[in-house]
Amino acid sequence: MTIAENITSITAAIAKACRDCNRDPATLRLVAVSKTQSPEALAEALACGQRVFGENRVQEGREHWRALKKGYPDLRLHLIGPLQTNKVRDALELFDVIETIDRDSLARELAKELAKEPRATEFYIQVNTGEEEQKSGVSPKDLPALLALCRDLGLNVTGLMCIPPQKDPPALHFALLKKLGDRHGLENLSMGMSGDFGKAIAAGATSVRIGTALFGARA
Ligand SMILES: *Cc1c(COP(=O)(O)O)cnc(C)c1O
Image 1 (cartoon, helix red, strand yellow):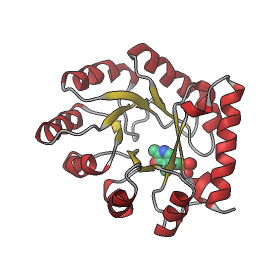
Image 2: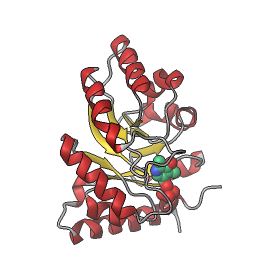
Image 3: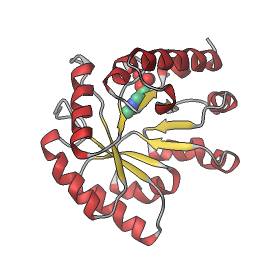
């Protein structure tokens, strides 16, 4: 399957999942996860009209997109991996949406950099819905305090993101993220990957992050 064929079939699957729960497919954003992909693969996705991409490392994101951004002013880049405070400036320079705020120190550093150089960056908070020790994300019980801090700092937090534990049915975690989003007035929910995006859409996802189903298995 080519990337073009994959995009066509994923778009159709997204549309079907939306219809099945009476949602308008236009309300759903496909974030093409381009980590580890070759320049040729990125070019092919761009040629298909795909403009929203997700990267999980700042450095790799820069290598992939810094030059291309000039030629594609409508590109929207999402950071979907953990962000170290010493990479904040580079991240703000490249990404339109940073989905992985997960701690106070990171929120403060982002606000500090934005005070020096204002930008229209959108932020999501990553929630560790499974409370897994090794996974980043704020635990659900600590979300209200982190969100309050972000709002105090003036960060434009518009959504939540989660990565469910491998061992659990993902729908439980998607439902929890939806509940937290509703409770806190956050309209964007980034949840669902290649294997479970239909379930995420049914649960209220507004964006799905898809790598393997679009580009093929990663090396
Ligand atoms: C790699 C990655 C994805 C994409 O996963 P696939 O199963 O390849 O679709 C989604 N979200 C995050 C945070 C990732 O790191």
